[in-house]
Amino acid sequence: MRLDEHGCLYTDPMRFRQILLNLLDNAVRYNRDNGNVIIAGSNEGGKINIHVKDSGLGIPEEEREKIFEPFYRVEGTEVDGTGIGLVFVKQLVH
Image 1: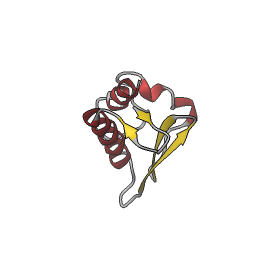
Image 2: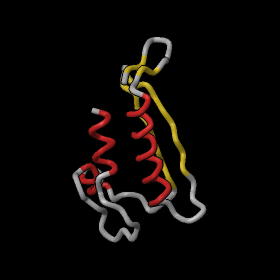
Image 3: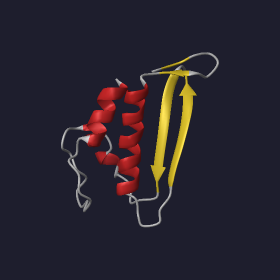
Image 4: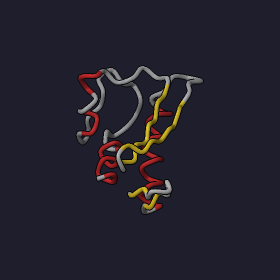
């Protein structure tokens, strides 16, 4: 992904779609009933940042890096999943 000086994003549309779908899927599935999902973007020093925030329970700070490890699941989570969605996102971004 690349952002030019005019703010135009150059990326593989299929990859970008998969990134967004995985992030949004997690935000919706791990949210509380009738919760909110906020999506924002920023450009910091030529790096594109996508921020997805939901009103769910959140991820404890000590576990935030672990969520990108294959098959890792936050303890106490009752939502079905494989633990590979965010791993896939990280691979697509890099």
